[in-house]
Image (cartoon, rainbow, N blue to C red; front, side, top):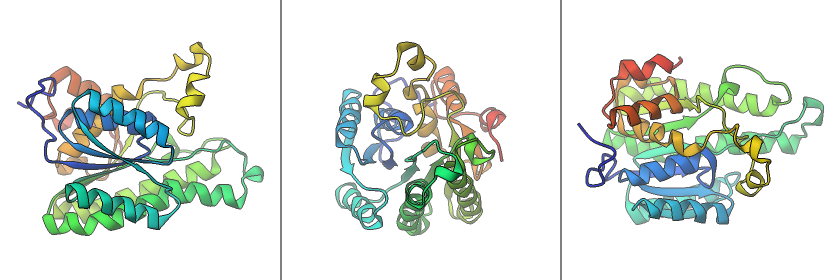
Length: 272
């Protein structure tokens, strides 16, 4: 059994992860845990100071990180970031599309610019990263693509017309691609936090300015990092195309101290 709490045993050693939205929140939590388990992690987002903080945390657990400040509305910048990772470390084996923006606005206040920005970052950026790495994964017959969604991907919320629309689209992309990818050895999955987290667009600076009682209501994203690691590690076809609870998987990993989980136990909190 692969013990995730033993420093000499790194189940993700040899993996190269490209993680968008890695400056804060779930992306940061996933990057730190994956790096601690041996993966080299490319940290992709727009805010350099937040990426630098994530890199410091990665290095604190003995991991290796590459900071890539990137405007995810710019497809050329996305391609340049992907190429930089490949030039340095080789092929990307684990793609994590986590970046998202959420503007809480009723439809009548949602301008075309707000709408297009949501689609550019929440769904188009995922398309561009997948389009780049997928053919290489097909040639190798191996890889994982993990798209981070939320309850907004399967039900509507007031003042979230743009956000819900993008998350519904991301779920559709994932489920359709999973059908094509699994026979080729590539695992394509979705996830939800599975526990209450801070709003996705709240910066680290803004988070620190929130009242202590409000901060206490939001889970530390680090407690969901093992979920990212497991979905990068496993190739079980039963996981394909489903939406998984990051918190549930992380609790299982911590309980069993391994990434070799019983898939039936994982699927207890998963959805089609």
